[in-house]
Image (tube, rainbow, N blue to C red; front, side):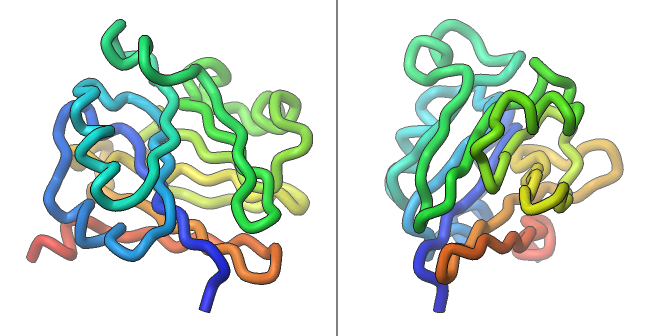
Length: 162
């Protein structure tokens, strides 16, 4: 059993799917990596767990007024950095330089679900949680930390909706 479970979500683009609530129902907290579009969706996600969010390139003033450009949090002893990614389009070298103390860097922007290990750092994109794009299913991810060791699992939201 993990010490901590964090739901990772990005690129909802104003479309908060019901499957998100099923996929992330057992998390301890949520991280939204930007392109929220509808700030009420952050309140909706609070029904699941406390939310840490950052803004993305398509977020208007209503979202930007309530969340920062980037965030760093401690999850079970693991430093997790969050940024949308348009600032670095995500170039892993720039992400690593921007967050040198992070063990996990969460970003969105590309809409491509992935998790890459660069040394001892996990760089994670949960994918687009709103509508499927770029040939990928809509998805989220779950960060589990057990004994200070992070791991990532992606969840295909379209498979849950079938």
